[in-house]
Amino acid sequence: MHAYAKCLLIAGSLLISGGLVAQEFYRPPDPNLLAKLSYDRSPRSPFDKEAGIQHICLAVSRGQDYRIVRLFDDGTTQRLHGKLTKQQFEQLKSLLGSSDFRVLSGSHGGLIRRDSKSFGAEIPKAGWRREAGAQKLQWLDGDGENPFPGSVANVVDWLKHFEPKDGELFEYADYPDVCPWGGLRLLQPSVATNLHR
Image 1 (cartoon, rainbow, N blue to C red):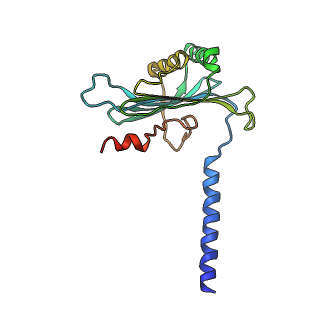
Image 2 (image 1 turned 60 degrees about the horizontal axis):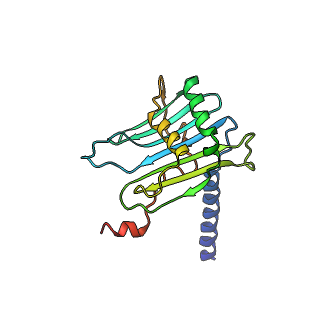
Image 3 (image 1 turned 180 degrees about the vertical axis):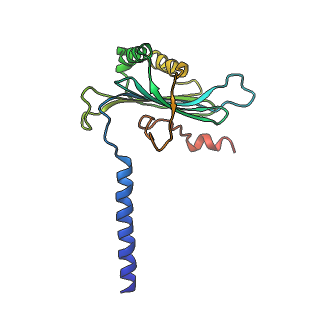
């Protein structure tokens, strides 16, 4: 009888924790969302002359509101929210709406041996409901072997040069989902890891 009670307690705990985990992953889609974008590059060595931003995540609404998270080479993180200027918003909308960009989808990976850059995008389709989905794109350029297409390079260039003006700081807990689904996840296969040993 004692063993039965332990099994029942363990099974109950697993069911409850499983339910809580499942609740954490689903967030209803924001019908006002224009796009979520991310750019990531390998950390630079201390001797590298090109320094700056390692990670960028940006979420933009159709009302021109933005939330941005940036990780700099020195390890500092910046989280800001504010409003894009009309010009910034129109530039981004134009880049995301280009026919070359809209035909891209899926994951484009590669092997990372040393340096890498990645781009992620999640763009809701018009009238987005959970069933309608979104354009999702992941592009990995490992060691320059899978360069970004021109339309992606243009969006990355816009992201890297975007300077938020009059942005206000926010805490991670306030907006935990700034990055697109799958954004900022550079995985190195075990083969590449073994080369460093």
